[in-house]
Structures are given as C-alpha cells and as structure tokens.
Length: 249
Image (cartoon, rainbow, N blue to C red; front, side):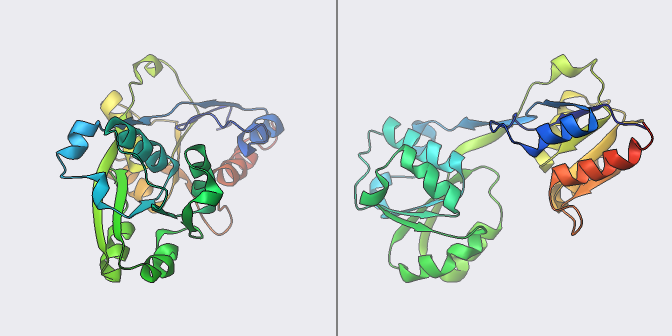
C-alpha cells in the first residue's frame, strides 16, 4: 500500500534543512508532527521531599537539555544562588553548548563527554571526590546509575521533571498511513488515548529496541525499524520504505 501521510510523534523540527522536510518534498508525502509525550517540571517543594539540598553538591551531571532547564528552574525556585565554582559534567557537546543559556561558559568549570553516558567516566573518575547531583526525569536510563555506581563516587539522583502522556483526543478520527514512535512511552500514550486502537493498514515505525519491545507487547505489527546498519536514522528508514511502497506511483 502506498504512503501519503505520516505522523511523527515528536515536536516539529525547528531547523529548515530537517531530513523530514526533504523526505516530504522528495516523495510528495504529508508529514505531520505531534508529541505523544511531554515533559512537566517537578516543583521545588517535591524536590525537597526527595531530601535534596542543592548546597550539598559540588558537581552537577547533565544528561539532556531538559535536565539543564529544570536544574536552573529548581535552583531559582529554591532561591539557590548557583556558585561560580560549581562543576558541570555534560553528556555531550550539544548539552554543554546549551548550558550557555544559563552560565557564562568561559567562567565555569565544564567537562564534556562524547555522546553516551559512559563516555563521562574518565572525567568523573578524575574528580571522584566531588559530591555529584544527577537531576533527571522519572524515566532515567539504567546506564547512568550503573556507570556512577561502578565508579564508586558520591552521587545522588533526583527527579526534577517527569515524562507525561499528552492528550491526543483531537486525533480520534484522523488516519495516517504511518505512525513513527521513538520511545516506549509514546506507544503507551497511543493506547492510553485510544485503548481500542486497531492497527489494520496503518504502518508502525519504531526507533530503538525498547520502543520495539513495547510495540510488540501491545500487539502491534512493526513495519519499519531503525536504527539498522542500512538505515541508522528514522528518516532513512522511512525513505527506504516509502520508495519501495510508492514505486510506480
């Protein structure tokens, strides 16, 4: 069956040269964007209930742009004056760059990993006497706690924000040829909003093994899977599928 419409369960890209827009133009398909999940901040009162006093930490580990935003939001709500000597360990260059929204980069102690959380290990090990705070979501990947425990450093995890399922009731009577998912929570959101969802001719695209597992557990048929050696990104996987499905269009 040919593909004419795709719903991507993420916010619309803010860059003009997004591969999704190229996909749309090249194959003359309609691509819509709608987050199936969103992030909500945990208020300072609830952070305090986790026995968190920001004055007790000399280093902050930041794993996403959300963790940056919500650390500084909670700090402001707690009237905590962020000291210039505070150390920041950023999982990637993009997160470190984003940190400039809140601090003067050249005046701060910022340590940057390559990409994966484990890449921070040598840097954290070098400063193993610090007291580390990991401001995170309620759905933190297991690799972060595992890595920190293996390093035997003094660290604390705190929930500064939560992943919440979005209200999708306005999509009840809307049909798409392909639904693209990027997290297990996105799949859960689909079934929370539409408990009687029937896949029928809808093609399901999933990114990552945990998303794949969640989809299968909900009885979905997976038609498009990424990443693979041939299609390392979702857009590449979609393009390959559409090129085949729309052949001779």
